[in-house]
Image (tube, rainbow, N blue to C red; front, side, top):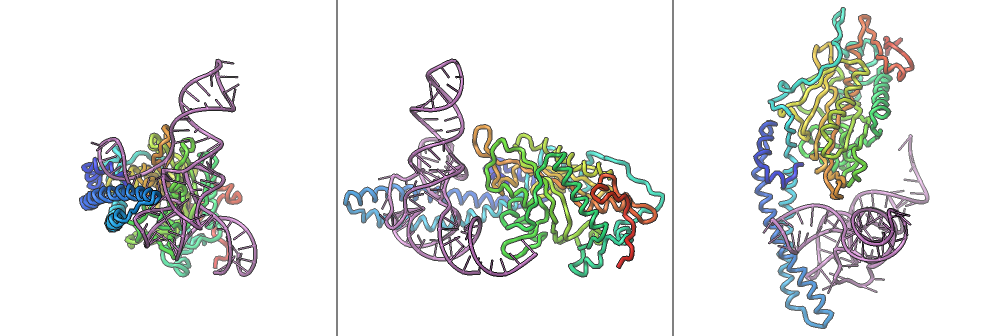
Length: 427
RNA sequence: GGAGAGGUGGCUGAGUCCGGUUGAAAGCGCUCGACUCGAAAUCGAGUGUGCCUCGCGGCACCGUGGGUUCGAAUCCCACCCUCUCCGCCA
């Protein structure tokens, strides 16, 4: 959510930002609602002031034994009026606020202007793209050959885009989660959190998934929704709080399963693990002072990148352009890992600075140097997507005989084994 | 699921029966000042948030939402949450 007072004074900037994002929002109607809202509030406040004064007098008169009858009758009318205005005011305020929730964040000045994915800007390449002496196979073939990925049964017991991991596949998944969490807690200074995998509507609104992206979520009963990322529960950890200045910056890391309906991506990535309704992810979340959030974005990116460097997986980093930027983000770096079978890089992490956009929605503040509450800046990034890391490992570490070498750093998490070989007696 | 207790400012905690100048006592904490070589103690002043307004100032907020009333932290209704006990359960 944007600071409405700021929007009022910087309407041009906001409209320009919306244009660059290729987003349409009816700003005019929000301004009209705001105009009426303020007018009515002034009227109501005036009447209430009058009523408060009269009520004080009535109290006094009663104490002195005078008859307040006439004033009471008069105030009955005023109260009636106030009641009606308040009802209208509440409606106005609600629809005004509701519409405000549909305005995306304003991109940071360093964000490149562009239409979409094609205009994202490369900022870094790391690692050498592996060369194979044989045609590299896609991960689903490798995984099925090894008996560690079972797509058919995933579809049978749930639906398409669900996969069962078995044996060393399940172990590798678990090893990746442990490896990532250990790295971020022990070496990068994040506090580990194990959050609920369902949250309420308020939390979903706080980070920006609702109201706009309702179709992308799985909704459960009792006002609960399955989280699409641990960003949601972890960022909302401090919703409605005022943090002491010394507490900042706060770094959290969390493993969670993530659930996404993938509505509107029907033809995309239908095979394999790339696009699943349920996947695992280790998330990084930061709460920072507004003055340092862009420095923190850089280190967040480094912390996420380190996962791939230690796994020795080639990657590149791109800055998302205005047309590709997510709704709540002011600036985003995507980390993309090399996928040999597709001969391209695929997103494995997204690191964003939301500035105070989420903090306003979720009401997360800190007490500044002068003791005044101000909104924090929130950031988050995948550190990293586990399912896609599995894809990258299976493909980049594949051998001609169909086995997969286990990256060095993962071996301690896998009982010292160095290779995934076909399981005996696969059923 | 059943029974009971409770939700007040940064914290502790009064006020709620018998509605009135109580945004809210008192204490603690915090800030500034005085005293002091300095500190402690002591004394003095200050110390919630949001909205509207150029400003003066006004309005709102005592778990949430309604209601009664000229007026509600205080009365009525519904809901939420926390704690204790019982039942059930991984």
